Image (tube, rainbow, N blue to C red; front, side):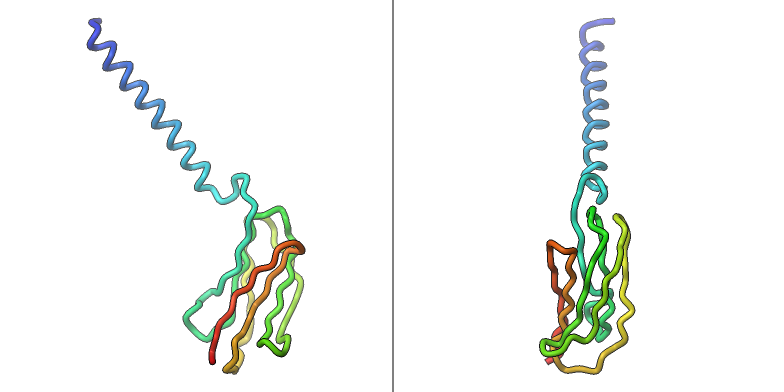
Length: 119
């Protein structure tokens, strides 16, 4: 085997090893469960008059509390349990209102709000 062939084999092997390494790192960071600690709340369909929302949990916390209000009155609230890696979707009946509806979700430490404005 001459020197040119050895260099080509070395570069090809180096390329294959670095490709495998980069693909494995990419898959690790795209995995939402891999050492991540987050949760999110969002409307199922933000463009219509439906108030159903989803809580997506990727944290160690499993106990959540949510409240729905129109700024003056608390319309609905409950405590829920959501396992890590799970989604929970509300089944809120459509409300007839022309006010801003705010949904506040808390895990005991952090609080997040979403709202729809109908004014």
